[in-house]
Image 1 (cartoon, rainbow, N blue to C red):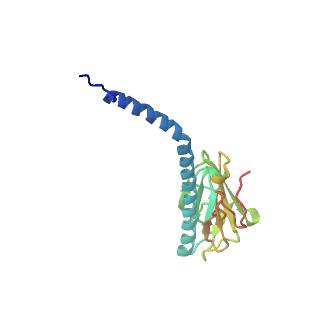
Image 2: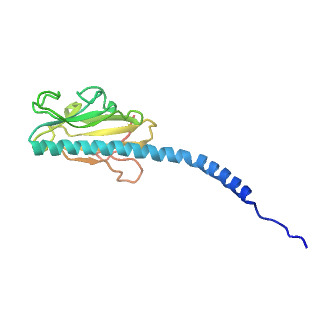
Image 3: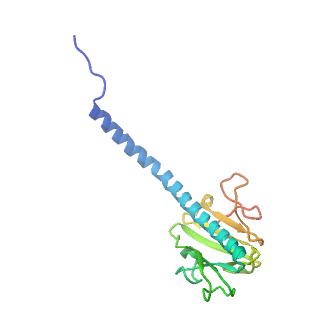
Length: 188
């Protein structure tokens, strides 16, 4: 009587599993990169939202104007928003770190993920929060555009005159956030 072996040996099973894992890894990588990019962009916007909140709370608590501005060197205002930004107490409201001013928060460059812009009333490229917690007549928005130009990766933080900030939301379910007027945020 002969016994037929119709199964796989342990080594053959391991080779099959190794080949399948390589194939599935290759197939899932584009989705993983897209997911990672969205996580990075959301992290950048969360950090910015926290910086706006820090500016507002310190302005109220310390009864001082607090400035949030773009900064290349992490010490003085200047450069582009992608290079980073600083938040500092601005006792004389001149947008320059001097005298008793001190840094409250800073963010470094994130230009490898996209670009950040600030559009505000009077087109100022800084945000100042008064001791009452209001902006200095600077309602506006921070818009982040990803390098890949995919509209679903655009993000926006809307800042009101009262100094409160909120994330732009996708209210119509098309995957693209809408600005304060209800129009999709597109990066061009």
